Every structure is written in structure tokens, then in C-alpha cells.
Length: 252
Ligand code: NAP
Image (cartoon, rainbow, N blue to C red; front, side, top):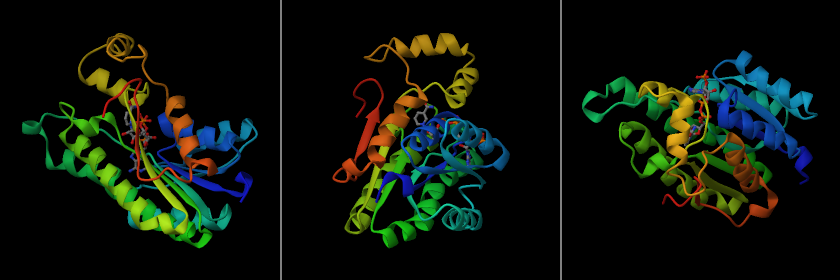
């Protein structure tokens, strides 16, 4: 199947890593469904893709809501064609030390990262199985290895690694691969919010973090988009069930 006919879904693609990934997959020749909570914010990513000569559609959906996820996947299949690339990227932080973490902090992070990836994958896999071809890419994190103040997020991101490996085992026979990308520090609104939470200027925070990274720079959304582009490609058909740390150094 030529790349031109493929349809990709990127969740949480209004900004940050998701927006860069949507732009990269569109530049690779895929038609991209840009999913985010608010269709209007997703539209900015779509406008950039279309201005660059690509094809994309903005979809508003909460990844943690089964009915909204099914409606989104149905609309994508009808308007764009069967989605065979899925990037589960939508994410939130609710950082706090364990003794201060609320039930809501815990549940929100589990709902968006784990339930969201589960629901979108379950709805999209039907199309991938029908096509006997698919690529599922889940966003994990170096935080899966443990990170102070992120007991909820670390558990979710480690959970996504087990989820990914199991998808690879169950779906491989249908020509579907599943992999996780585990970014280190990437400059986005999410890491800007972390700097704000600990009371540091974002520029200073980035310099401080970069000094500890072997390649001596912080990551950019395009670094992650590049890895996802590889995993979504035909040539990556023998890479499955892997966790690729994209962190400027070894973190696993
Ligand atoms: P970001 O800039 O905060 O963007 C996340 C996007 O997800 C936002 O557009 C957000 O929408 C959307 N979103 C949140 N909850 C959603 C929901 N329930 N349904 C649909 N969309 C939802 O984050 P990022 O830094 O690009 O991170 C992207 C992914 O990479 C996340 O899974 C994150 O955990 C992971 N990651 C990031 C880093 C990093 O250093 N930045 C490192 C490791 C892993 P709203 O704007 O409307 O809230």
C-alpha cells in the first residue's frame, strides 16, 4: 500500500509533540486526523499541515471517553479512510508527592494516558486488522523509570510499556506492529508547566536540564516526531514490542 493512501490518527495533536508528529506524518505523505479535546485548537495544526501541502482533519474528542473515541474513529474512517497508523500521544500531568496526591490527580492521569490509549487502540485496531497492516505508537516517558513527584504519571507511562508489548504479541499476526517511544526532556507547554510548578524560569530550567543530558541539549518535539515517523514506516515492519528511549542518552 503506498504511503499516500494511509490515514494516521495522532491524539493530543493541537500542540507540542503531537502537533510536530502530525506535521511530520503529513510531510511523509499520510493523511492525518488531528485529535484533541477541542476541535478548534486542533484546527491550528491542520491549517499548518494544509499550508505545507499536506492533508489533515481536525477532530475534537476526549480520549478517555469511550463514546467520543468511537465517534471520532468512525468519522475518520468515513471521511478519510481506514486509520492504520495510531499515535497515542494525548497526555496530562498532575504532579504531586505521594503523600499529597489526591484521588483525582491519580485518576485523571490514568484516564488520559492508559484508558485513552486503550480506547483509541481498541477502536482503531479493527481497521488495521481489516487492512492486515497497522502501526501503533504509544508515548511513554523516561519517567516510567521513576521520577519524584510523578507517582501517577510514572505508573501510567510504565503501564503503557506493558500495554505496548502485549499489543505487539496479540496483533503481530495481522501485520500490525506496536512500539513505545519514551522521550526524555522535550521543550513543550508540558515541561514549561513543570518549570512553573517548581518556581524556575523556563529558559534557566532548560539550561539546567541540558547540562545533565549526554548530548548537552534538551529535546525538541521534532526529535520525537522523527522516531515516530520511522516506526510508522513500512521499513520498520520487524520492529515491534520495543520501547525506544529518545532522551539524548541512555535512560533504561
Ligand atoms: P502538551 O504540550 O501538554 O500537549 C498535550 C496535548 O494533549 C494537549 O494538546 C492537550 O489538550 C491534549 N490532551 C490532554 N488531555 C486530553 C484528552 N483527555 N483528550 C484529548 N487530548 C488531550 O504535551 P507534550 O509535552 O507535547 O506531551 C505529549 C506526550 O508526550 C504526552 O503523552 C506526554 O506525557 C509525553 N511526554 C512528554 C515529554 C516532554 O518532555 N514534553 C516527555 C516524555 C513524555 P489541551 O491543550 O486542551 O489540554
